[in-house]
Image 1: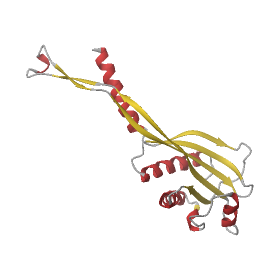
Image 2: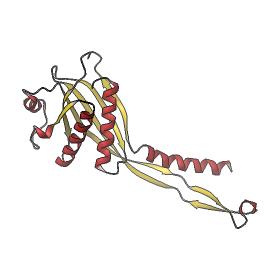
Image 3: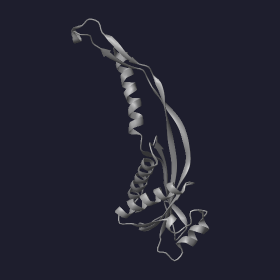
Image 4: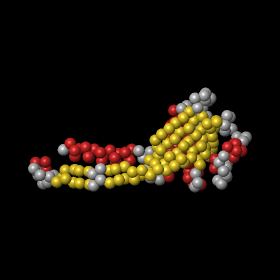
Length: 200
C-alpha cells in the first residue's frame, strides 16, 4: 500500500513540476558592487532577435511594463533600423542627443531540450459494493517521458554615462506554450529583479 502511495505521489509531483515551472526562473544574477548611482528612469529597451516580430513584441511589452512603474522607456525599433547591427557604436549613435540614462539589452543564450519521467499511476477501482467489497481492481496508467523546452535568456543593464554594465541576469523559461507567454513571463522576472536591486 505504501508503494502504491509513493508512486501516485511521484506522478503528481512530476506533473506539478511542469505546471508550476511553466514560468521564468532566475538562474544567475550579478550587480556591479561599485555602482552607487541613482535609479534609472529613462531607458532604451533592446531585444536582440532574428525575427522582427518577436523583437517588436518583446520591446513593446517591456516598455509598457516599465511605463507602469513611471519609467520613461523607448523600444529600439523606434529609433534603429530593423536590419541595423546592434553594437556599442550603433547604440551610441541612436541615443545621441536623447535623454537616455540606461540601455537594457535582452538576448537569447540558447534553447535546451529536456524531459521528465512521469511514473505509472495506480488507482483503486471498487466494485458494486464499494469499499465493503473484498476484491477490487487497479486502474493502471503506464509511465512515460514528457519532453519540454527550456528557453535561456540573458538581460544586461548598461549605464550610459560610464558605458559599463551595472547589472545582469540569466533566466530559464520552461515549456512556454506561445511567444506571448514566454515574453510576458521573462519580462515579469526582469522587472521584479530590477526593482529588488533598486535600479528602477
